[in-house]
Amino acid sequence: MDTIPTHLAAGTEDPQTRTPLVSLVLAYAAMIPVVVGAVAVWLLPAQAPAILRVTLILAGALLCFFSGVRRGLSFRQPGGPTLTQLATTILFFGLGFASLLSPWPLVSVLILLAGYLAMIILDPIAARRGEAPRYFSRLRPVQLLLPIASLASLLIRLLG
Image (cartoon, rainbow, N blue to C red):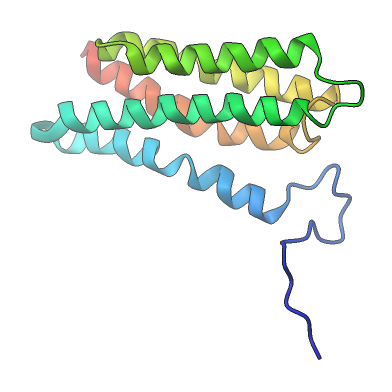
């Protein structure tokens, strides 16, 4: 009798370097609302203010979520979390939270861009240091180009 798998396995490749399927799907699926929101701001000018606000809220919430991911990763560190992991958690959460609190869309976009740009640099470093899954070194730079490009387009829209 065949058994029903209870999880998605990493496959036959080295799980240290291969991005698990579920991580790959969830990583890109999380970016879809930000990309769609940025496109909608350009295509639906009458609804742009409301769409912009929702898109910025989603992008800020994602940045806060990513801070939780970083904190969760620190729990599996032998010897406990490193100072770098805690600082990165606080950085991502602080920027995400600040973007959510800002009443000015332009300020929110700039804060979010800073957060996602920091993540595109810091996550691959964390992966090389063993503070995050090794596959982050390949996944994050490509994944995070989506919100960075979306936020950059919103910045252009706000300045234009």
